Structure formats: structure tokens, C-alpha cells
Image 1: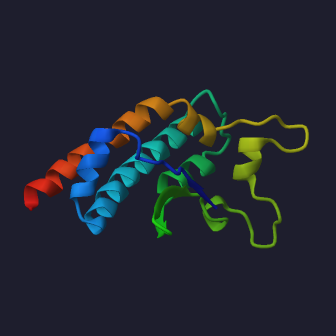
Image 2 (image 1 turned 90 degrees about the vertical axis):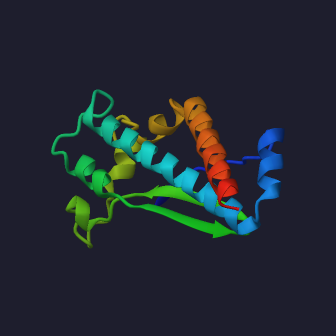
Length: 149
């Protein structure tokens, strides 16, 4: 399961003008690098949320699995998606025949146990600042690539 954030970079006239001057492949490269940095920062927030007061993790297995979780990306139909891959069952000690996958149960709730979100807050509580950082990373990437030409 991949959590992806679909961000549209259009709307900032100066950024749009700079992007138009770069080749399509270079644009994708710059945006992909910025989104990968964003996903890495978000992953660190997820681990922090699993380490702190938001979620009382009993064994630390979920936290350790997220520390090792991969960042994966895909490009389809002109869109770039980068996200954190949820840990595999074996990394969490869940047997293949067990129908339950507890990372989603912790996030959303199960039975009489209330939800203890760790993913959503990692994104929602930092949305404005993260968008600013992505914009900065894209701007830096554009300037770096423009300097190479």
C-alpha cells in the first residue's frame, strides 16, 4: 500500500515560466527529486509520530518497519507520484495466513479500539510548510539545471 500526495505545481506564474524554459525530461527530474525529498521528510514525521505521544507503540515493530520503509515513485499520464510504501507483512511479523494487517487498524481504528493516526497528521499538520519546502526544492532544482545549460 502506498500513500501518495498528488501536488499540482501550476498556479505560481514565476514557477510556471521557469518550468516552461526547461525540457520536459528535466522538469520531471526536478519535480521528482523535490517530491522524493518531501516523502523522506514525511516518512521521518511518521516515525516520530510512532515514537511519541500520538501513538503508544507497544513493541516498536511498526516504528522500526517504517524506519526501513521504502520511498517509491511512479510517473503516469504526465503525473508524478511519490509515496511511502507501507511495511510488508514479514517486516511486521504478520504471518502470510493472518488476514489482519494492523498498520491500517492503528491508523483508522478496529473493533472497540479508537484510531491512533500517525500517517494523516504527518501530512496534514505540515501541509503549508511542506508545500513551501517543495516549492523551494523545485526552485533550487530549476536554478541548478539552468546553470548546467
